[in-house]
Amino acid sequence: MEVALFITCVNDTLFPQTGRATVELLERLGCEVRFPLEQTCCGQIHGNSGYGHQALPLVRRFVKAFGEYEHVVCPSGSCAAMVHEQYERLARESGDMGLLREVEALVPRVHELSLFITDVLGVEDVGAYYPHRVTYHPTCHALRIEQVGDAPLRLLRAVRGIDLVELPQATTCCGFGGTFAVKNAETSAAMLSDKLAAVQQTGAEVCTALDNSCLMHIGGGLSRLQAGARPVHLVEILSATEDRA
Image 1 (cartoon, helix red, strand yellow):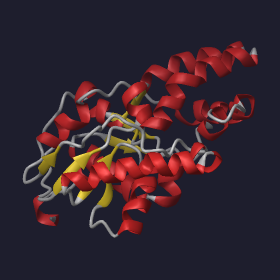
Image 2 (cartoon, one colour):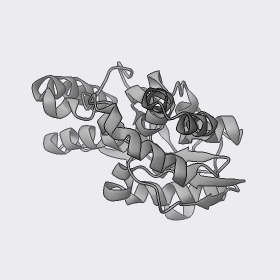
Image 3 (cartoon, one colour):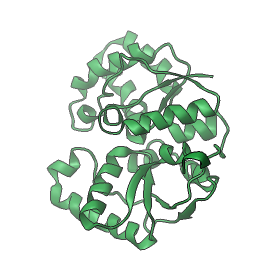
């Protein structure tokens, strides 16, 4: 199966190891991975900040970059959610009916990574080995917009060697929220404090999630506390094998 990797700008610029892990995992599962060089930001920062009209050039670029592919896979719940939640509305509001038709055709073919593995490929055991104590934080966009449900947990439970521990009050927001963390820093910090306490309560070595943006926020807090836990994207766990443990 041929798939196109929508890496996202955050992963491309700050977390390249996530992109490499995604390619390794998808290829291990029998996919031929393509990386359209034309891709760039999906426009989420514009759309979520009330400047949707300024995201339109990025919507058009996305359609141009990925329009020919049957499956587009994204290792980010929030960026996949931007495509699924806002692209059709933005295209319709622009009055560009040609763009709207292209978006309507493409949007159903864009998949958040964990759902692509479980629902499209029909796989739960990806052959991973990760001998660490891990807790999972369900990020807001992945949980509430992408509706990933327990797909990430099913994938984690099948990992050999893992000690998976439940995160208390897991579904509460970590306080990142993109520009929210900048515009409402005190509120964001208070929300993060609660999340950090929950992570520490588990005794986990690793906090994992589907979004590196949230993991960056959580990881910064863990580092400042010298908590002994570190953030790791879900796909980096799923791509790990016994010979690299």
